[in-house]
Amino acid sequence: MPGNILLIMADQLRADWVGANLPKANTPNIDQLASEGTVFSRAICNGPVCAPSRASLAAGLYPFRFGTTSNRNSFPIDQPTVYQALRRGGYQVGLVGKMDLHKPDHYYGPDGATPLMSHWGFTHLCETEGKMNAGRARFEPSRGRGRTAGQAYDLDHDWDLAGPYQRCLQQQGWLEPFVRDTEQRKEHLPVWHTEPAILPDHLHHDRFVGQRARAMLDQLDDSQPWFLCVSFVGPHDPWDAPESLLTTYANHVFSSPIMDEMRDKPAWVRNRQKRQSGSLPKGQIQEISRHYAANLTVIDEEIGLLLSALSSRKTCDQTTIVLTSDHGEMLGDHGLFQKAIMYEGALRVPLIVKTPGQPGGSSTALAELVDLYPTFLDIAEVAYDPTRLDGRSLLPLLQGEVGDHKNWQVSHLERCRMISDGRFKLIDHVNDAPELYDLAEDPEELQNISGTLRCRRVCLFGETLRRCRDRRGAPPGRAIDRGLPA
Image (cartoon, rainbow, N blue to C red):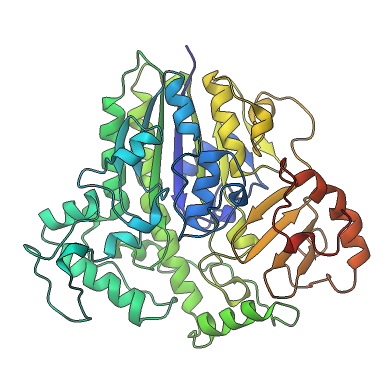
């Protein structure tokens, strides 16, 4: 029988915080997984924003192929998914946590099960709100009224629960203060603001995800293969870690972010730096890193409990475990926070794959999240047409085969797009100056050489872009092809 697959996802987790020899956070369970599995040290996401990245994984295609290039876009209703393919192949397909395939509607059902998610292939569902959506006040539109800041909630008459986590908080009497706190952070405080969570530790969102994940694992029948995605909502901002875990990092000194004078950066990036870091207090990066580390420790603890529950099942040694994230977090690099930019902090993601019977190790292959689509189907022994996908299976690498995986990596959002051959990295912006970096000589992306090495840019990327064109003839965004040979 084909093996089971456990996909563990974090949200906004930087690649350089996972699997390192000197970890920045206390993550013994993730570190153990990294020591036993294959670590893809150069993996990237295909759109460093939640919805495009997760949609690319689901479709096995780059975001521009099907139009999900921002958080304003839902996954197309008729776009095939890897989850549908697994279900047709006889798999039980489970989800606990954030998925964001229908992000704009912010509705997940009181139990986290909607017909739309069943349509996309899931048989067992507990889809939760994301970090931001969990603190969003939802009102039934037909009632024709909104709410101004500071206005009292009437939970019996006005409130329309977004999903199961809000329902849990409501039952515990914490929903209203939690929403007020989240709205204050999002609407009135700078992105670098830090303050411990107002919720007790046992009501932390990722505790809820972990508890529901273990419950769903119990529901899956080992007589049939299963796929389970456990998608945590942290360590995404706002910076609101539990006080009890913050104290463990009180004396920890984190590495300093990349400092950048922004001399050669596009205008919109310089403006974003001023907006996000213009009033940044001295030492605040250390406080943000404490919260980031503490929220990651919550996830690690829940992963430990989940893997312990998995170890008690008779099919444990037939289960492939994958750990990754939808995108990274700038965490002060270049004076920036969050994501939605093509620099390494936001673009690179952790990717660890532990496969039964394989010793693990490390790989410098140019892996992408789209590669998980064919990888999962190869593990499940489900047939697919590889020419229809941008993803390429990682299974040969996991089985020890030697050879090139891909010659380039691509990432795409509505206002910028990136292509890299592993050394040179081209970022093209809509209505702004391009960027080109030599990652071998300038891994911190401080020297934009696009103006001085245009001929080299053409030589390196001309053939790659031609090969990356849509099979129907459309290039991956017209702007990125500007000035390159056809």
